[in-house]
Length: 504
Image (tube, rainbow, N blue to C red; front, top):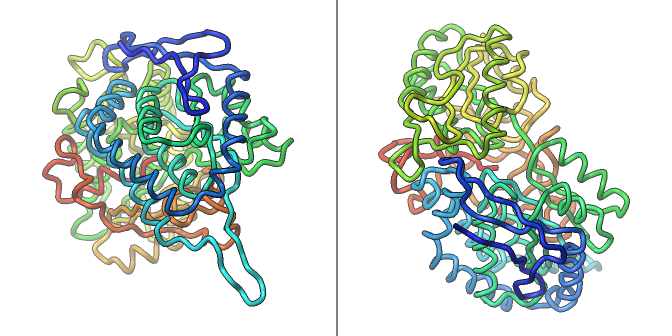
């Protein structure tokens, strides 16, 4: 049992102002795995005050000093990678191979990227008679989700450190363990008092207090659209900068060529990674109508081949994060059937033999783009296949969505695939797989604003370089082999990027 009842404020572990706790449930067993404290507005006030005090000195620290600190954090992070991965598996149900592999690898990658960018970043630029300074924004409130907990924390915390910002982190209540360990890493690495602070608790309390706080200069939030809207409203009274990475309903366009069936199978398997709990997951699979039967057969076989079970075992998919999320997935499956979508694989309930735990069946529907299951974010292992008649038709379907976070195009003709990607109104597009920690990530439309990842963080917490970073799609190369999971769903696959796509 884990017992995390203190917050990290002003360089030390601190009891909450008003004691209150909550149990954390292991989604694989439905049993209590630990306890955390629930913070209050008073705890936020203490953390923000500490961050404000520290900003004066940390904002004036040298690049060399920041690099030394990031490398110290890197050494401690590396030492505790196995522990971090095990925490991710326990808190949100990712298979252990995925937790200790790509989940932890994402955090390591963002840390290394922050170091690489900082080594060469120009904080001053002479333009004619004018000296342009890129300065730290100030105190940043960082609010993160539970689905890729290490990714979402590290992509915010490390750029903030690198650029001289101070921060207060509000980790997810459903998945708090890995953030707690990361705070221990920061403490052990010698982060100066007040530069990094962490308060656990409910988003409606801690997130709201950060968003309204007059001494917080920026909010960076990853999560659902309704919460993002509320944060924006709360922040408006103090005219904060707000960076939002919200939901998605990403289209995955499969071109009509010799690899179509293989690409459909890879896309289907990829959708099921992390139990479908990825904001940018390719949950709308667009295939040629003329080859629909072939595509359906390939998707059905791939979905039925996904092993589901105890995340400590050799499985491709574990449970979803909570009973509430399990109910949401079941409701959408029922909604799809009510709307007349054709069930290809999976369906309602738990997989056979799994009577306990929040396990869902890898599910595939054939549907139309006007159905709720094709328009609303389900955040579970539910894939929707939609047919198209021409490339123009595919682009129209892909763009007919209130969201625009991620996108995918697979085809042997790379030029044709890139031409389609250029027409898709979405933030990042993966052409034939790929991955790049230095590429910008963020959404169009209701998927948010601002960019995270790498040097280009438009509207993010790293610096005041406003309006100069391109708001364009990114075509990403493959991730380095060192970050591929050592076991689990990607093992032995010739297309690892298909099951390790973007992670938000």
